Image 1 (cartoon, rainbow over the protein chains, first blue to last red):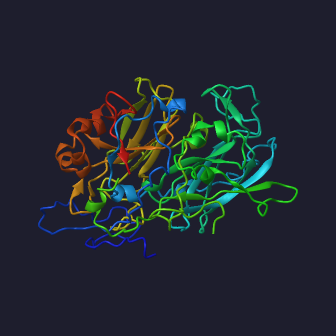
Image 2 (image 1 turned 135 degrees about the vertical axis):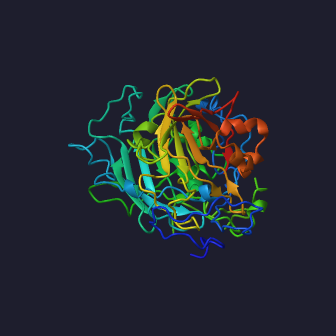
Image 3 (image 1 turned 90 degrees about the vertical axis):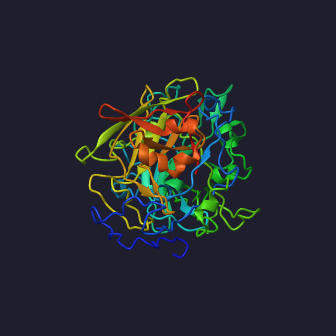
Length: 279
Length: 200
């Protein structure tokens, strides 16, 4: 597509895909005799201010000793940043996307279907993207050694899934509704029900790990994690929508949630030296 | 079109869909993100393979036992197996370019990899061998991004545009140092010796 420039201006000797070790241009110097060798790279948009939570958010106590004190330095997007792992070897196996069928018996809980699309901010599908999920069981208990609150482990539920988006960026999991659970952040603290999502997209720049929530959860108001998003509309971007069309008769409730990763910079052909000045 | 995302309503980015916000991986990231072969960026048999080891620490100097590092890097020739590398995608058998490692109870992580080649800076120059790093953990609401360079690449490091852009006193926080079996690189999230992190 026209908005993903990937043509080399002056690197004609690039080997075909699959060549184990092609001819490789050596390090190119600004004062080298061969003249400038410019690479036209895809460029991703800058993250708008307030789109993501700050690292320093004391209401979430674990941030206190874990946020950097120094302001971040700018890292202009170059080859390493606009590429990323292809992960062909991570194709999901049978039942990786159905968390209710990974054991001999069925897990306890409300069976649900969670589906949606992975898009970039230009509205384009992100195909072949690895989507990894993990979650608590119906009683709010994770299958993790350090989760010891008095709610039972479900022997038929691991709470881990993975899938790959299709050509239109669609993903779909079958699972059970996770329960809320208590934590020690503040008095009588409870996390709203959520599913953790890990996404790669196409490039290192697009990497995202986040959490999906469910509509109208009464626990949002006291949850520092969801309240950490500066943009007041940002909270809603993490809340799925009840989806009657995806609800399967006599089987499972449906929820829809779309995920948006960084799209192209507005002016992908701009001189990167000038782009470095952007915050 | 989607029903749960919307165009940004105001500002110059009104034509863009609003980004999905980040959230922390939380304390139980290990159940969802552990890969048995996660730290194996390169197989042991690949020429030049070494171990990169380190510890992730917080502002009190304590190890972070519920964190994860991810690495993305070029191959030994400075190439990527990716369609957006305009020089063409290159596959090196035994080399994935990507790795992830959950920290253990002592905050330790390790990777097996090879030193990447120099990567063009896109502007006629070259970048020193480097690894792009994502750090995630309980208590990190958004990922942190940093880079690992190699202390024994002094001439290339001296020419690297990213290192050169940093104040001299923080450049050392990005240098992996030779050690038995490979290199050591520690990550300090906060305070004395704080690693240089980037806005990408």
